[in-house]
Length: 328
Ligand SMILES: NC(=O)c1ccc[n+]([C@@H]2O[C@H](COP(=O)([O-])OP(=O)(O)OC[C@H]3O[C@@H](n4cnc5c(N)ncnc54)[C@H](OP(=O)(O)O)[C@@H]3O)[C@@H](O)[C@H]2O)c1
Image (cartoon, rainbow, N blue to C red; front, side):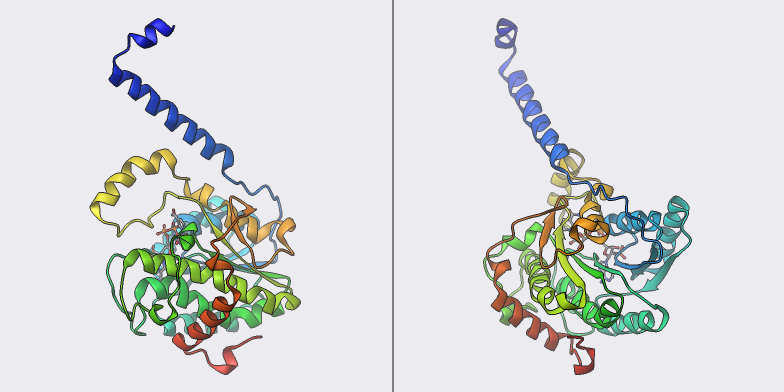
């Protein structure tokens, strides 16, 4: 055996070694991927999922629909949403799936969405702030906010505030922010540059936006704990979705090799969101960051409660939160 390995060319040996290393990594990823094991039904419960027309959001919506929930798909593109709705109803056999138009890059749209929900829905049991994007150039929205920051943080911040009264009325209820381990890729959060006023770097903006979601989770959780509302956030893993659609070509090429090998499917990526939405074991867990259906470590910065408080106040100003829109 040893003789035959030695007789292989050096290139073949390197090739075999690479295959073994890849195999070990893949096996590790399969073994550590968290799966929601709860069989909980959601009959009579209402859930809202932002960005539910594709990727992690769509898989989350499908799972919750299968559990009997009334599922509201909060999507910006009505055509994409209609296709997703059809798929979800067909696969779940649950007709209680509805579309509501929501564009997080417009505070007007967020306010209209929330007003419509408050008018039409008697209850809201789970709000999943899932939508997100990664952009490559600086663009401002109609509100003068940076697109990536508004899609990922400011829009969901306003939405959560506007729906908090209904969530409290429906308690026990749950708020879930789909963040990312990318939150730990920055050592600073410059509140003077939250809207890229001083400088712009696309990666930094994504890291900031995901850190903001962890900090908002930390700040909000104790404020609503007595009302029976839990607030948690999560990293879904590296997931094969459309999130890299705007990435540069070199990244797309690397991704084309890495994604099939190492990335989770969207269904696997949805497991931690589903776990936080349904599992009894997390009913009283709040203010935490999860990965693979377990509490995970955050960066040091993401534990800074003073920073979280300041971020909350600054964000209120950016989204022009009115006194009557505060629910704690
Ligand atoms: N995939 C990963 O590896 C990964 C890793 C860590 C964290 N995440 C987070 O996971 C979440 C879900 O992402 P994904 O991977 O499922 O990506 P995706 O397939 O690109 O889905 C993103 C969803 O968000 C929606 N969206 C984006 N901007 C929006 C806006 N302004 N208003 C309303 N909806 C908007 C998209 O709608 P359209 O289809 O209309 O664009 C889409 O439905 C994101 O928050 C992302 O940051 C993903």
